[in-house]
Image (cartoon, rainbow, N blue to C red; front, side):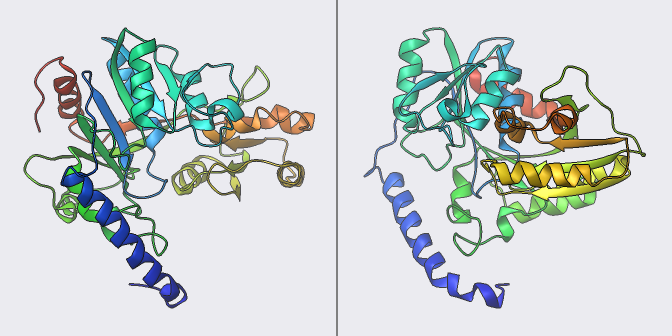
Length: 353
């Protein structure tokens, strides 16, 4: 159902759909060329814009493969001001690496992280500069059809499934849902822990997957708070007041989790990849100082923590209170099947569904 206030976006959405469908058709016919590469390339992407938990899934797959081969992750590097191909180090800055690649470089010392807007050029450079590269993970490359990945993994959020969405700008779909046929694996992410097997089966049916495709379900696991600036961390109890600061597409799961373990949660929300400014820091400080409780903490996401860590003019009270809440993924069922699928493609053993 289209809301009345969005009726004006219907025609631009139709035009966008025609353009993306034509582009995909040209690739399907071979008029626009896709390039393959002699080493395993796994694309982790989505059909919607943001909010599917892509980064923790990339980290999960990279760690899965790092025990047996040299893994490289190639990202566009959103927010960076640098250009071209670049290796990302843990001591880089957001302006040179982008926030998500920098986060991955710090979370995965055994993997190599690279950025390049041109994915064909990026993979070519990885192969040239990293002869030991055993597999490449494309971070958010499903619409980058100039590369033909050997395995396409598409993510969709349980709370806002792609099958119930509309094309941009009316909705959040980057391309028509028919593009899902290019996927080898579909993962429904951010599934609440109380979801029943019957509900999972219902969702499977709405996806209308083909016989060659696999579908999996994952949820989010939150770790202990990690201090951004100071060494000693804090814990959250039923007596703790939390100021939650998010600059991500879908903060609802984190809000729900913290509301279940803390006394109260004051949520300050910004847009995805938000660049924090002085007025934002002042607003966070004001919200924190207004809490009349000694047991209080400021929580933010891993990705937001990367950007906030680079801000120097933060008051000591906020610096001492600021923590990130690490997140990882957990398969609801059939994790072994997913592992066999990934290992099978990369040559470890045969995979199946």
